[in-house]
Amino acid sequence: MKYLLPLLLLLISSSVFGQEAMRRWRKMNQIRADKFDLVLPEVMRENNIDMWIVMNREGNFDPLYPDLGEGYVGSTGYYIFTDNGGDRIERAVLGISGYLLKEGGTYDYFGSDLELKNYVKERDPKRIGLNFSKAIGGADGLSYSGYLELAEVLGKQYEDRFVSAEKLVSDFRSRRVASEIAVFAEACELSYQIAEKALSNEIITPNVTTLEDVAWWMKEQLFKHNLESSFGMPSVYVTGIRGIVATSSDRIIQRGDVLMIDWGVGLMNMYTDMKRMAYVLQEGETTVPPGIQNAFDQGVKVRDIIKKTIKPGLTAQATEDAVYAALTKAGFNKMKGFNKYTEGDITDVIIGCHSVGNWGHGVGPSIAFFNPVRLGFELKASNLLSIELFAYTKVPEWGGKKLRVPLEDDAIVTARGLEWLYPINPRVLVIK
Image (cartoon, rainbow, N blue to C red; front, top):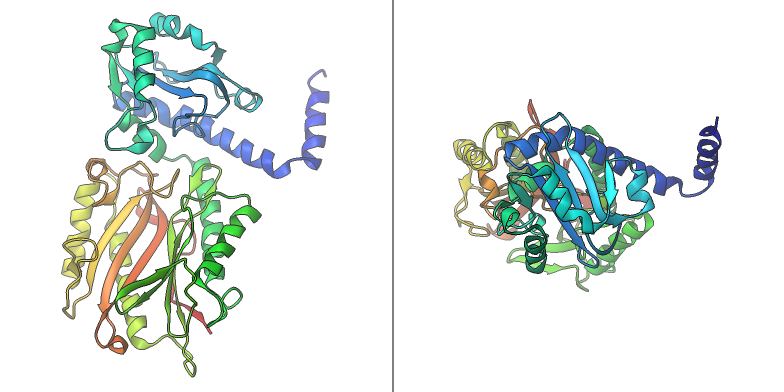
């Protein structure tokens, strides 16, 4: 009976105050609990790490601070995860406090940062993972002075057991639980709906609206829906015969323009990354010119081949090789570098299917030339990927010059292969 009144008061207050805030908090708690229960044990053991220490300083939080529950850090604090051999990883927080962190219910113990030495000594881990990395920024949250402090507090005996948690961080973040995928799909819905509305006559009046008008409208939607973004400013740009003409500038949108948007939203620590393409009709036109439509269609063919080729169980590098082999067999040309297209009649292609999720560019396996270390990571079911490609096709209406068609939508790797999480970009949007 004594628990009934507080619960009743909570239900009454939540029905009046902070409904959306509480909804989001509960979802993030569920994600954290699921990842601690289901993902953390396997990734700690796969990476042979007995204890994982994530240090945070006031004003200098680790990139995983939102994943691990946040909280108030007065000076220095630690999230500590210990593999004691059971089916559950022990979780402790030292030097970090706060109502939301404690009420989340995902940690076993809260204590002072001064307990660190004894806490570690009692468990005597053989390998201690710390967040330092040359290749992955999201796994490089430990500062140099923080490393020195840990070495001083724990002593030479345990300093010799420090190892990089780079791969552990990548695995922990990129292997998704169902609650996490549900939130990401919600973010994707908001992201594509805002982008497609931005490229419409509801927002754009040809010869009046500027690129930055559209970008600022999109920024305003972030405030309206209480969202974040990995993009400082949405990339709203015009592509012409000589390539990109202008991006999110005061350049006025004109008839005959080919418009692109590259952007994403952040919701409950999940971030999207996607593109959309539109054409502004000339006076007298009713449809997209055949050459531009064909260029888009070639990009869609490339996207279909990528989707059919990606499977779990291979490294990202092996997958990239398989994708390019399939594209070459289908008559496309693999570009030698970004924007290094040819003058031939063939469609030139380059892909950058990168990890996505907790930022627009995630830390997991990445089928992308710009993430060389993560090309060596194995694709696992539940990894989220941004299926990004650039296809260059000749357009007769442009005197045979090539149009750069960028396609990008977010998907999940499953046991069946690759699956979309929302309605992907099906067509060139038309602005009348």
